[in-house]
Image (cartoon, rainbow over all chains, first blue to last red; front, side, top):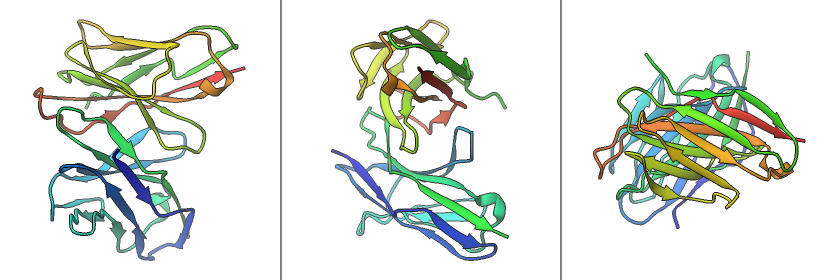
Length: 113
Length: 115
């Protein structure tokens, strides 16, 4: 079945550091890929998405590129802020009429001032 | 902008009791999804509905049932509650053309505690 593998956390960075959270996937067909963010005590918010190979999703300084050849969708940000502290989930939907999301285990990011 | 509404936000039940969680999707969204997130876990898909019909089913226990009503809101009914059912339950909604579903928007979740 479809699956998503994220780098283990937690990740602790200083403000203005570069962030990479690795995400790889296994899927049949051509899934859509997503990054969701969950702030403490809150629900899931869509951060960015990509629906086909070589698409780049971006939002709030975060970017991720859909790499079919490496089945990856790594999340990057050039300069993190304290307010970016949250749990980040990589997810895919396999389409084909079944759009349920399959999530990775999540990566907790803490940014220190 | 209107978001997905879930009620109640918090619910405390005892073992073997029943619980009903409600979800009101974003206006004009016709598809609803339910997910369960255990402590420190990733969300797991339970069930989804498109145009009031069940469209997909995941790891939902037989003790749980759900439906989508004519106004597109959805309810998740949980019976014979167990301690392991304690979790955050998310509802998400999206717009679908039947073959293509657009991105899902999540509600704030209902935190269910079973004692």
